[in-house]
Each structure stands twice: as structure tokens, then as C-alpha cells.
Amino acid sequence: MSENIKTKVAELLSSGQIKGFLGLRSNEGHIGPYLFTNEAELDSLVVGDWKNRGDSRYPLNKCLINIACKYPEDTFGVLVRGCDERGLKALYTWNQLNPNKVVAVGIACPQELADACECLKPYPDECVDDEKAKACEQKAVSSIDALAIADRFALWIREFTKCVKCYGCRDVCPMCFCKECSVGSDDLIHTGQLPPEMPIFHLTRAVHMIGRCIDCGLCNEACPADIPLRTLYKKVADIIDKEFQYRPGYTDAKSPLNVL
Amino acid sequence: MEYKTTLTTCPYCGCGCGFYLESIDGRLVGTIPSKTSPVNKGKLCIKGWNVHEFVQHPNRLTRPLVRKNGELQEVSWDEALDYTADKLRNIKEASGPDSIAFFASAKVSNEENYLLQKFARAGVGTNNIDHCARL
Ligand code: SF4
Ligand code: SF4
Ligand code: SF4
Image (cartoon, rainbow over all chains, first blue to last red; front, top):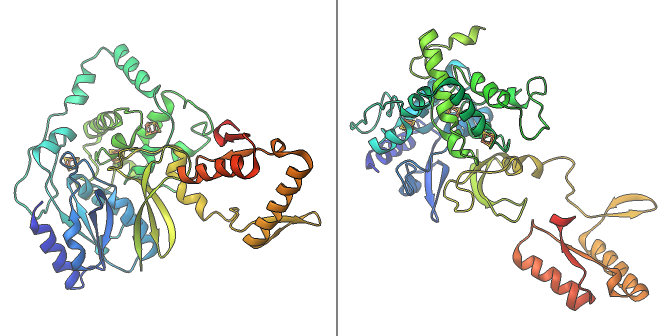
């Protein structure tokens, strides 16, 4: 990991520009979210590389929302990759965070991670390092698109059948902030029913994430059933991009569906 | 202002999933599964995901209750333990050790479960011991 991040964060903390820096810490063999409030702790700052590059990423923006709700007047720093920065931009448009109270410290992802994510923009606009990985082809989506429609449907139903309805995909998602959740609403989903209704449960979430999902992949990683949720949401994002020329977090604009 | 992420083990079942409990100024606000826990690798079941909710739930019992004159009343741990020990002793004397059964729990450690069966077998003198998952 580059020392540039630590230098940058140390500057922000010592100058009093931020009250704390939300990043990742390596402690007793584990990597997890941590709010750094003094420079002496920065030795343990990491970017989430455990067995593979970026395999220990966490929904830091979600933690930041929790903190900002309680301390709206204070400014905090946060570690961002490309996806997290997209998340911040989209969260600003949804009024979930105040851009004047957030200082993002950006890092670019290595090609290995970008390839694993099939990421369209594996770096934030501003990052402490110059080396940037290339945007990737959307192979997971195109391989499913290549199937005949009946096979495609069968594949998704087969995947959805594995769902244990843990709601982990929602709970981990840094872009899930609604007070009343669509997949927790009895009008749309029979909440007490297992297995969930197929394919309504998953499609309701996929559609609801339009204008929100910034393709971070954390839902996919949290799914105990290994359902390729990310591929599903990538496909939905492609459709919206084609129809409305909008991808959340790639511009400062609001989602065209905000007005609906 | 104090924001903490405390790495701990899920209290719900015997799996032992690892997660971070998020707290702000001493109040829990969230649960985040640990990616580096070899048990759950960043995943949780629906109960684990909601651990932070029940700990501070107003309906949660935080002190022992003993029924007095038909009403449950909060008492000290000493009083509750003395009361229970007396009752168990009386039952054992009147009806024998096999009139008592013990339920161990998935929510406690191996060592605590060991102690419970030791208490059942060596203390009370019965093999009537089972596990909460079969309740
Ligand atoms: S989605 Fe892109 S920016 Fe985010 S971790 Fe993956 S490669 Fe990096
Ligand atoms: S994380 Fe996976 S198993 Fe859990 S509710 Fe979401 S899709 Fe279903
Ligand atoms: S990829 Fe999953 S976790 Fe990330 S923003 Fe989209 S729905 Fe949320």
C-alpha cells in the first residue's frame, strides 16, 4: 500500500480539516472499518487487501452515514475507491450526505481487482496515486445475454432458488438508505415467507436499485448463496444507461428516476 | 464523539460468525460481518445481521425476575440464585435427581456448557441434559 495515503490522512487530521478518517484497519489479523482520530494510529491503516487485492472491502459510506446522522456539523474523511466515490456522488444527489462535510481520499484499484469486478471505472476522479487500471469488458453480463431467453430465465430462477432471504444484500449495500424498504414492505413482498417469491423478490430489489447501485459488488460478496447479484444489477444499469443515458455516480446529476 | 467498530462473535448460535458491532457514543448502530473471519467470510444469516437491534431493545430483560404474590419483580442476582438453588434442592429431595432436567445453550461458550453438564451430573446427579436446539 502506498504511503501517500497515510501522509495525506495525517495532514488532514493534524490540520484539523477533518474530525476523523473512516478507513480500514488491520488489527490482530483481521481487517475492518475503523475511524482514525489521531495520527499515531495510522500505522494500522490498510486498503483492504487480505488474501487477494481488495477482498476485504467494507461499506464505509454506510458507516459514514451513521456517523453523519449523529454529528452532522462535523467533517469526516473517508477512504474511497472508484465505486465508493461513485457512491458518494450518488448519495449527495439523494441528500444522504452533505458534500461540504466529507473529504474523500481516493485510491486507484489494481488491474487484478478491476478485472475481478469487471469495473468500468476502477479509480476515483482524484487519487493519491497516478497508476490507474483499465476499464473492463462486461463478460459476466454478455455471457448471460448470449443465452436464449428461456435459458436465461431458467438460469436466474435457478440462482434465485438458492436465496435464504437473509437480507444481507440490502443490509451491506452502501446505497440502501430508505426508511421504508421495498423488500421489507408487505405490499410488495410477503415478508414472512420462505423461500421468497421468485423472481419478484430479487427483481424488486434490482429495479429499486436503479439510480442507486454504483456496482461495488459488496452485495454479491455478502450473499451466502453466491447468487450473482452484481451481474443482475449490472444488466439493469446497462438498460437504464441505454434508455436514459444515466449511470449513478458517473456524473453529479440526479437520477432521471428521482422525479418519478 | 466516539465511533467504534468492535470485533466480536455472534451470540445467536453455535456457528460463531464474526462481525463488527458499530457503536456511536456507547449506543449500537449497526452490524457488519467480518470479511476476514474464517467462519463466515463476510456473510451472516438474518439473525446475525440484526444483532445490534435486540441488545438495546426495551423489552429485553436485564435483571432477574422472581414472581412474588403473583407478580414478577426485579431482584438482585444473589436473591435469584438463592431462590433457584433452594427450589432445586427441595425438588431433588422430594422427587429425586431425575425429576430435574437441564437445557444447555448454543449461545454460550463450550466451557460454560461443560460446566452446566458437570453441574447436572456431578452436582445434581442426573443425566437429563439436552440442547436448546432440540427444544
Ligand atoms: S468496483 Fe471498481 S472501483 Fe470498486 S473495488 Fe472494484 S475495481 Fe475498484
Ligand atoms: S444476500 Fe443472497 S441469500 Fe441473502 S437475501 Fe440477498 S440474495 Fe437472498
Ligand atoms: S453492487 Fe450491490 S451493494 Fe453495491 S451498490 Fe449495487 S446493490 Fe448495493
